[in-house]
Image 1 (cartoon, rainbow, N blue to C red):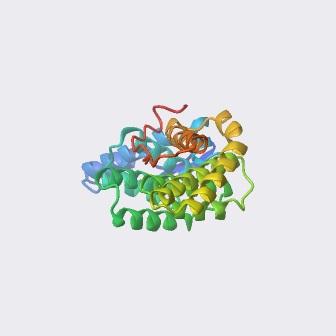
Image 2 (spheres, rainbow, N blue to C red):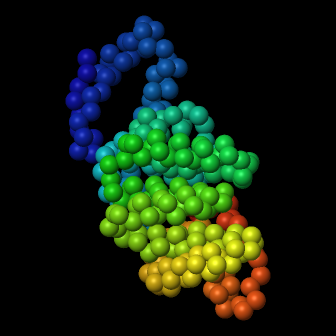
Image 3 (spheres, helix red, strand yellow):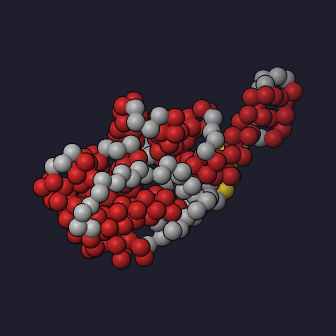
Length: 270
């Protein structure tokens, strides 16, 4: 009735072709159901491929080896590329790997574009990423999960959460240390801007100079690494704003918001 076959080093069981034809003819397997399963199998094969190096670096995926996890991330990267996806597609991604944090990233991007400041977005980001983190076992993936969650927090102005998360994940030794420092510096710079607008100048100075120290110690390494355009564009804007502010003897209050045009895959480099 079934036979074994090895595909890409993995053992799979396939339905005997004669039996399959018989069952279809006898209506034991509805034709529509069979075609749906066949299409699903073709989809899995399409995404059962090596994750491109630059994407693996930016999303913390270099250490994953499980086939289901790889397919899940490839499918979610495809979602980010096209910014179009169905509920069925997202359900498959989650079933393949519940720790895939790119799915809540995708959902949050869609909702941020509709409502940048709503508390519901903040609550959704926190809930979705916490759920994904419960299934993550790789240190590198834990780091980048928190990095991208922090980038979303920067978009909606939750700078204290960014600082808290960066301080937490700094306990991991990893190659993204300069990114973590630059991201925390960006959050501190934005905090300083808020303090200046509220005329709390001492706190403004403290935040501003701490941000400057982080920026100066990390920017060279940060710039040498192949981070996505979105990441470098936003963090460097905070860096330049901070530098101009420090050099200006009569600083003015200038707000800066993270751009929300996440061309993550199409525009990889700064």
